[in-house]
Image (tube, rainbow, N blue to C red; front, side, top):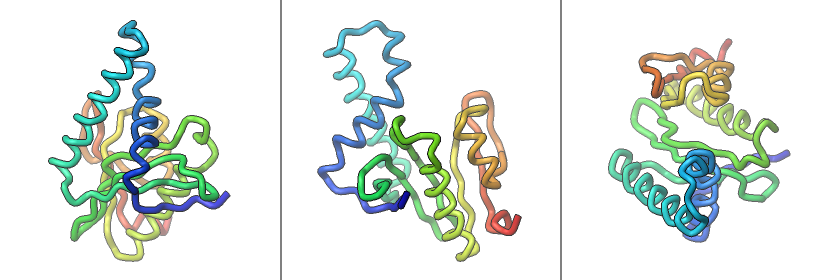
Length: 159
């Protein structure tokens, strides 16, 4: 399995919307909407999220996660002078649990570590993602039941 990152292109928009829809599927199923309404709501929320990320992280770069050349996820990464911020990361459900996310995160940790920089992110507490981040050396620095701010410092790479 070769996991790589590449910069997003305009024709990746469908993939990004599908990943968002997959992530939100359970929430929208609870609303009992018809398929057309659900599609409309997902698209609207996706656009709002993109606009929000664009406003909050204007320099963030959208990257596509590929496995053996197939697009299977995305990473929205904001690079600052002191560290990296993972704004958003997602792997398609059919590819979860196979080490793809771990491979992407290890690559980021190696890069940040070689530059003496940290990585920050926000995650839902007690989620599978939070457990993965902890395994890779991220620690909680603040948060509440809605979200935790985590940081990985370059010293964690030596552990």
